[in-house]
Length: 385
Image 1 (tube, rainbow, N blue to C red):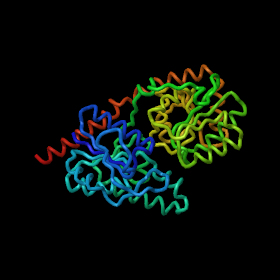
Image 2: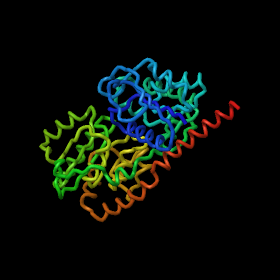
Image 3: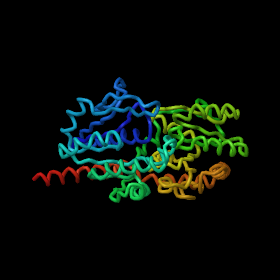
Image 4: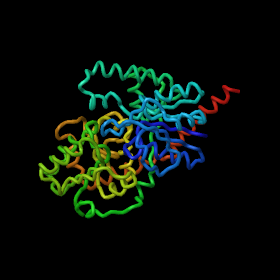
């Protein structure tokens, strides 16, 4: 098949969605398909993979988003030659793609990676919630009902679409990861090279350092736990709009030796950093199907998180991780102190993480998406015949 993947942002921007798309593109190519990736902005970036088609766009601050009123000429000429099109963002890529899908009778697939209501709460709180959520609901509903298939990475997001948009036809297909990559990192670092102590219990977080991820709350929880257990450290892997403020807090509390901020890192380095750690921890409650949690489990790390949609479908309390009831002072810190002090519990949860991750291999997850592509393309062929 000739497959078109569409997204509003791509490399060099690093996020769970860009990593997911990059990984699936490579998997489809390995299966013998011809795959094109269409995105916006960073026109001078040198891609290290084939068939990345970039339309010039205008940067929207430091969000990674690039805005454009239409696809570029190269994209417009290629789209009609595709067998199927799959967008990972609805409001720009999706709406720009709709007329092409309709004109050339291309099956249109959309994966809903994001709780857009929660993101609007984090970044557009100045707009009244009723107005903001109402506009989101109507715009998303109009788009979803013109798609041939909507994929939701978790059942909770399928339920959210039903409640928020009144869309009841989501197809749940879990996201997958390259398990071997995290079990056997390609590069090596020592704890000392990163600033970690050999005998410390190291908590790590990977992902955006941003409001919707609650990283400042995570820092506060670690700080309280660290006062009780000084031989602990926190490794924060990633960049984002809250990184500067976080570094200021680290300095203000004299924790430069105990909280290590790596900044943005190449995705290929993530397994190496996680292998240096003991426990993965996150305070986010905005996850759809958290790839960072799956990646941590693939690195055989137990997980401490907040009991919330998306998270609870991956983390089972007292099996592969520990779940705090809510975002509240001491909620995460309690379990951080518990797990740092109990080697037997940590080993038990690590075994649970290792057994859980077997359900998220690429042949199972990306392979399921390929099967749906084939079904939609064959249905189109039969309709023409």
